[in-house]
Length: 102
Image (cartoon, rainbow, N blue to C red):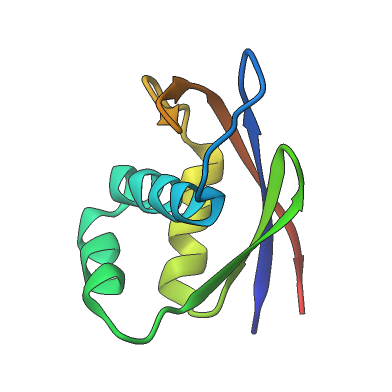
């Protein structure tokens, strides 16, 4: 089963970066490492990535989690309150919420 999550990135001012995809990918792994470091390391080292990330608008991305262990970790991310998160060298607040299963 595929589980979809919506991640919002809230910054005090507009974020501009030359490579938004790389920045979002890095943020995703930072958050995943906070809740399950072993899973983050395994996925990062694997040639098969059990997730897909794509933009929805300027402040949100959709994340599809394709394996149960990652879906469980995503629930952990959604429940966790993060401190000192930066995105494109700026402090941000991040929220993650379950969207739906397909």
